[in-house]
Image (cartoon, rainbow, N blue to C red; front, side, top):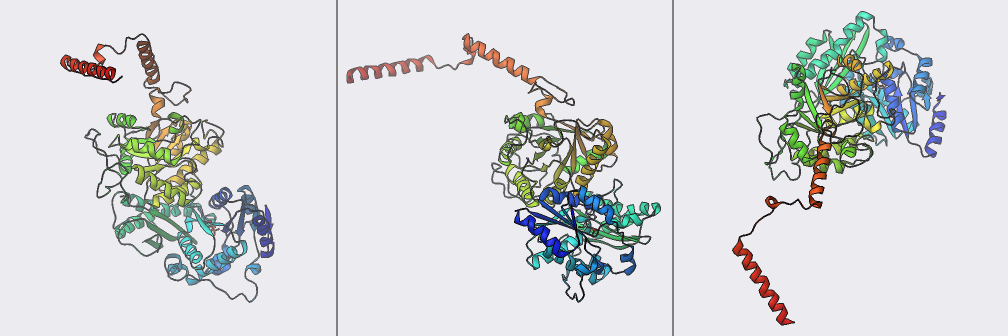
Length: 602
Ligand code: AMP
């Protein structure tokens, strides 16, 4: 990693990379790195060829001199963190390099900056942020710039600046990284005493209270705010419920809302936020073959074809799963890839059916899950949809259908809902997948997460083996699960994790967790239908229990059939249709006349 101090050196470094055809990612920061910064850098590392991290404590965005003076500066440690996270260039300029004598320009975005942080910290705060970020974007000219959702208003303001000034850069937003107890990581946390740190948990507690209130059906913003404030236990500088794009206050939670808090804990000013989605009701198109229904009913009860036998059960929704978790009722989930399996799932009163990308190896004959396409899974999902009414139906987003960008992820997730009638989609992994999950949820499609062994990237994890068997890997599984939970996933699959690790991680989980090879502590279990029924009888992972031996039955049946065909014992008299004797005589007469005609013509 190169450390550069001047804009000229920076331009030279980046120019070389660009000339070599490399894509460039920029991560602007003020240093004192923590895991939140590292996650941003790793996201840039994953998405771009050349990663530039800037480290500059920008004086113009501080409204209090004392705050600027107290801001932590830990450059020597930061160098190590940036290098370990894969940065290629660390740009750490002195103040006079950014603001030379006579500097007189100010970039300011109207409207959006007059509320929340702008109202609390004064108009100069965002002018300082916009000016320095504009300078960095000009100096680096990155393809992608990475920012944290932790500073939600900053993202909204910078997006507007970039749009208004036609800056040719894509913005990627990384979900807020938190400590296991919920506290959002921040460079300022280091200043908290142990007692203050305890009180600081009020911020995430308040956001969680707001989320739970909305999930429970409270849509009046004033009441949600009051519930959050009661949980905060601190005097907020602001605690606002606003539109996540315009930042205008909302009265009713009718779509996604941003709940944003700023509060002082002792001398330390902290901010945090969450985007909350009210329980989703889709207005998308009906899936093909569902008939000419004039309106698409809510996603939880998509149109079901008439041939499915009616049951007493109510359709299972994400909210119903949360309720089962709260009541301690185990959740039953299986995979299904076709109509007969869906009918079985319905008849067996399964709660959740996954049209898994494991269809790739279980029914399409691929060696692993990587090659299966969105089109193939949509076709299978449609067949499953036609076979069941009540289980919640989720489809896996296959490898390659969501990783590259939020836009791609949203487009493909919506195809599963609109074209196949799925209720939700599932994505593998934490990190960037959590960001994709957040974007998909924001676009109106519920998402189930998946951590531990993630078959799409099994090679990178060392093959199909249990995950989280060292403290470090277990910690990473926990971090992934927390990121997905924070992103708004309604449930998460834990795959191939030691039972003791699951038990520990479950203490941090607030959404239903469905385990596969993850022990008994999870809220439910999922198995692949072909494994549990023994439709395959080859290798099965340790966590599979066979509840039937269908392949043996199938082979025996087909062998008997072949033997009877060969010995002419099949078909027997009971398998043949009959014709009335007089009709047969008429047929013979007809054919006889025809034979005579043919003979005379010759
Ligand atoms: P800062 O150094 O505080 O200016 O932050 C630099 C970048 O890191 C900004 O885009 C922040 O939004 C982001 N960031 C800070 N804290 C976190 C966090 N806990 N999780 C994710 N991103 C963060």
